[in-house]
Length: 319
Ligand SMILES: NC(=O)C1=CN([C@@H]2O[C@H](COP(=O)(O)OP(=O)(O)OC[C@H]3O[C@@H](n4cnc5c(N)ncnc54)[C@H](OP(=O)(O)O)[C@@H]3O)[C@@H](O)[C@H]2O)C=CC1
Ligand SMILES: O=CC(=O)O
Image (tube, protein in one colour):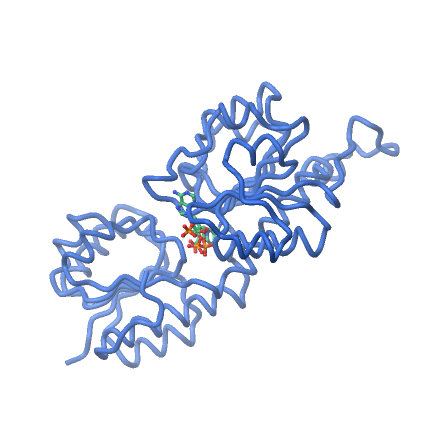
């Protein structure tokens, strides 16, 4: 019997065609309207497998998908899925670690460099005709080389950020992590410290910790207020790790010098978000892993996980 597969993702065409050859596929590029969401829930009633991203799963959705065997997420973060409820139903949840680590760390450094040199502001000056003479001190940025890098969450992406900072920019590294990781103290000549120490000693703070109950709202006004003069916060993990209200007020009153964000409490960012009015924030639309190569590798890995579970084999990367 052909398995029913629900896809909610812009898979690359050859992969979609391959899945369509092997399974009965219902495809949504994204769930953009109420009609899409309704059609998606209907398709899930007979689904044996789901592959995709940016779909928030809950118990009601799982209850309405009694045949579901595998959720193959095209992401490494699995905060959108209720893990216990999924496990309790015997469904296998898989994700896409490793293949997106470098692209996401690059995005972290892109934001870090843009914030340090105020690249968004400067680009707007050129486009709006405000570049009429050479720029002066009010438009200067800050150096990166040799400054202290603080990494919040020394997982795969955190290590790739530390590697770039340590080897590329000669930055002393401090990091905060749940488990003790003495091996990274050696690898990056780094120090594992408390969150408070990290915030008070770093010039650049890059947030790469996974979102969970334990990290939701981890970074608040108290920590932001303890930062050095001209400290910069970069968030490439999940918006909910940083209290956005506190971040906005610290950027507004100058308590925090600058921020570079790829992720937000609510995505897409609302058009009335106070972040949009801030010159001292660089904002990207959650593009951490969005390169052709990386997204294809993520789709391939997710599809391999799906195929293996449907064939009765263990997943390559269970979450
Ligand atoms: N912006 C984007 O487009 C992208 C964002 N991401 C985000 O990045 C996150 C990290 O990915 P990746 O590095 O691959 O994941 P990892 O699982 O390798 O790293 C997560 C790290 O967070 C640490 N951690 C977890 N909980 C806590 C806690 N309560 N306190 C302190 N540290 C904690 C873990 O510590 P321990 O060693 O104890 O496990 C681990 O080192 C993803 O979960 C996702 O949200 C990922 C890809 C793209
Ligand atoms: O945000 C992206 C992910 O892979 O997680």
